[in-house]
Image (cartoon, rainbow, N blue to C red):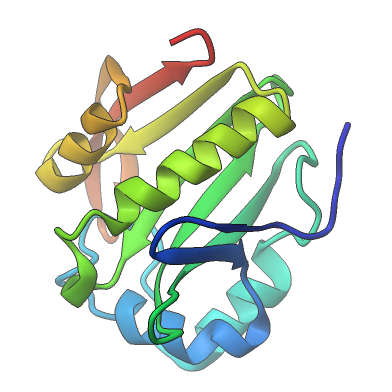
Length: 181
């Protein structure tokens, strides 16, 4: 198992790297807006929540079963941190991962998430040898559905009221992409 401690990739417009504690202010800036992030499972109330999350909830080793690794997206042209991606290395099957993405409101709809996810998906399949990537999406989040469908993920399941997020029971859509696809 490859547990390389660092990750960095560049796309045409972005630098994608592992999160650092010094990213906390930028992350809090776009993640703390409860309305914009209403479909997210984690909305920090304080900057301390972000520091705690980065210190205790995010692994700094890649490809360790039952851990989450967080990558950030940074615009090359102005070094602005605009979003993050979580990768869940599942305990039940080392060939599968779960992926999720959060982008600041002002940077949505410009193709940044697609660009970043393509790079990370390629990394997961080619360098880490993963066979399957899944995404869990709230069915009310049409933007995320469109994003993952653009990336050739297919809908596999619609689970009714199976997650308790932000004080309510919500449905969950499971999208997946196989390496062969």
